[in-house]
Length: 429
Image 1 (spheres, one colour):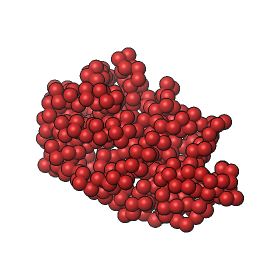
Image 2: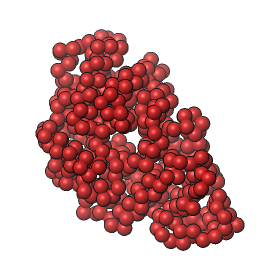
Image 3: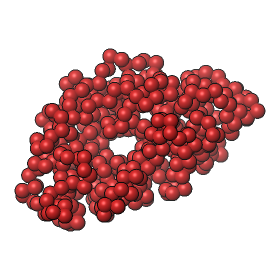
Image 4: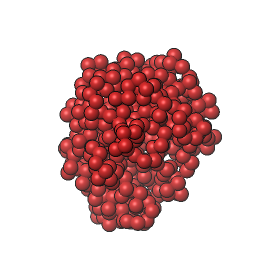
């Protein structure tokens, strides 16, 4: 987190929207038709994947990757017009919903005009050819930030979108772009909107190590946090995946969660998301509704910012295709789950989650995420039964009867112990 990042951001709910596959229309208008529903759900920030024109050369799939951009100022005609985008922003703002857009500054498409007009903006390999540093990104060419004139060009582009009314940037593979660039960009943007929100797609720790071994400058989360309010949770994502595959115990994941408390500054914020457009649906990993709900509850209750991937309302296991039209099937909308999701969103806005003096994730050597927050007046106890085990957990509550805020059912603490249930247990006392 940057020095001026407020802990209050932890109450904000980010909703990722892949506009192409969010509605049958696959347009800004299609997204706009969902705004009232998202506001009713309790969403604070609508995050849109890249909205710009997509390159034709080496295109992936029929529609191409939205991360292969041929014009940073343009609008992908597939989505609509600039006026349509302004209309979306205006309707969102009228409902007090912020709009965040995806910024892809590590690279461009292979047919971006700059390749001819400003070849000095681009990275070249040892053979002197335009190239990218990550091998499987075959449809893009990397930019070269050692060429300082590029900085002003890119920051000017950011200023354009901020003046248009955008409230935040999610910055693609931010770790591959110099931190000093992001610091300068943050400073310049703050002159227009001091409340602007910066979310970094920081990268897996294994990726950092690998790229550095190839001789590339890749920043760790600790470095990226200097310029960003929120970073991705990829620094511990491998342990999550290993647990889901049955390769390690939950203790290893909990150990990484505990480590975050020691290696980052006090006001660090992580985007707690177990699925996104790059990662498979939670239902695909768990094949179990209750396990999925407990993981999602953990994403809300762990220290950080809750991040929802569009379509999770349906509890689907299908992740829309990134490169082709593949609309979400909203006919499987689960009303009971929607009310539970609303409850999680409401609870995330409770003061204890930013005004705590103590925060702990406990390891009981069982498949339960036990999270607690405390201050002088309030204790929050959360048990997320991510593997549906029959366990009794010692908690920091006096014996007595309490209400599980997730499902409004009564739970009993006896001998300072609480019996796990199939639902998440959330007590705020």
